[in-house]
Structure formats: structure tokens, C-alpha cells
Amino acid sequence: MTLILDADDLVGVLDYPTAIDAVEGAFRDLGSGKVVMPVRLTIRVEAHEGVSAFMPAYLPGKDQLGIKVVSAFGRNREKFGLPTVIGSILLLDAKSGMPMAIVDGTYVTAVRTAAASAVATKYMAREDASTLGIFGSGVQGETHLLAISEVRRLDGVVVNSRDPKRCEDFCERMSKKTGIKVRSGRPQEVAESDIGVTATTSKTPVFDGSWVKRGTHINGIGSHSPQARELDERVVSSARIIVDSLEANLKEAGDFLIPMAEGRFSKEMIYGELGEVVLGGKRGREKPDEITLFKSVGLAIEDVSTAAAVYAKAKSLGVGREITL
Image (tube, rainbow, N blue to C red):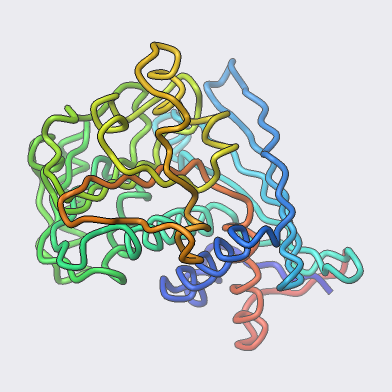
């Protein structure tokens, strides 16, 4: 039997502590060299301003095997009223290859991306970091606020978005949901926070790197193509950089590839991978006054590990619908 878990099912079983724990464990396995994860296969749908990616992974230590198919179409909301990111995850029995579950990947992607940033924030942000600045008022802005509040005690959140009305609605909703004061602010105010998140679809830098204070930690998650970047060269050249995957970032992260092409950045300036930090082989932060940056393009191990955790929890609670394929 194959378990079907839609978005409504996931709301009841996928909480942030579960996702953060699953993703941290996946990065620990990655750092130990205990995963099989080909670089994603990407197909660009130029006619409709979209991209579809196919992301398989196998975590032998946990017997977790699966693939996510995810699409990002930047105009979905305005054209169809759909999320920008849509996906599904097929979870397989690693012993037989039989399909165990088909899981809504849109919700998992939103939560696991934020969970990865929360893991990075746990290891890289100052212990006393208490203000969060978010560029972007979409789904990722919301999930990042919720996930990061699990690893740092937040006193205030400042948000900047290209749509002022949507930004104000976001701030009001999230203030009520979290009990934290969430307000809109100018780009410089956002950039001056203790912890920063860039969660936009912008193809050009969303703030001036000179605004970033010493001691700030930044999670850059919005750009995932060689032609787009949210961070300028001032940020990437001054920060202690940790990435989710060096191989994937050097193929997909315009935040690095654009300044590399201009001769203003080199791959040697990337200090290490998050898996190495989780294992303790490298430190996410050495000094209170250094700027740290976690740049992620998203990895299949995050999806498969999160989907596996959700599957186990859903089975124990009797959530979802079983079908025979």
C-alpha cells in the first residue's frame, strides 16, 4: 500500500522541531559521506518562465530513498493563483523499491528549506542574536520566521517586500501567529538585523552589503540559478561562507558565479559545507564580530529525510489515505 499525504495532512504532522531534527540528521550524514545524492537534473521551461528539477537521494544509514520533482514558476500567483513553488515527493522502500508514500512536496519544500536555514542559524548566528530581518513576504518568509524562532529567541522581526500591501498583511498575520512584533521596514533596516534571510525571486541584489553589521548571520535562499543573485559581492567577499553543497552552489548559485565571472570572488572563499559544521569538523562562527553567510540552493536529502519523518509520524497517527498502485 502507498500512503498519500496532501498539504492538509502535513499541517497536522509536520512541525518545525521534527523538520529541523530530520534535516540536521541528513546534513550530519552528508558530512560523513554517507549519502548518495546526484546533482539535480534541471529542465528550464523558458516559454512560461519556469524551471522543473528532479532530485533523488538515498541515505543508507537510515534506509531512506526517494525523489522530489519540484517546479518554480515565478508568475504562478498572478497568473493562476498558485504557489510559486510546486512539488511532490515519491518515497520508496529502500529494501524493495516499492513506493511507500507520495507526499505533497510544496509544503515539505517550504518547511525543509527553512529548517536547513534554522540548522545553519543554530551553528552560525551569535547566541545572543535576537532580531530577524526578512527580504520577501511570501511562503518562505513565513516558514523562515517560524523555523528560526525555534533556534533563537527573537525580540523583533523587520520585513521588506516589493509589494507593500502584501508585506503589511504578512506582518499583521505573523505578529498574531507568533506573538513576536513583526513590522515592515526599509531595506537598510532589514539588513541591519542580527539574523538576515533573503527569500525573494529577485535576479539582482536586494540590499547594499555595506549596511550589514559586524556579527550578523545571513541565510541566502531565494536565488538558485547562475543568472540570479540576492547578495552583492561586498557581502560574499566579507563573510565566512558555509554552503549546503559546494558542488551544487558552484553550479547553480549566481550569488557566487556572477562575481566569479567578474573576477571578484573565488571558490576558495567558501569556507565549507553545513554537514562539516554539524559534525564539528569546521566551525560556523569563530568570533562574535564576524559576518557569517549560509547559502543554500536546496538538496534532495532535505526532502527525503523530511518526507521519511512525516511518513513515520503519519503512519503512527493514522493520517493520510492508502491506495494500491
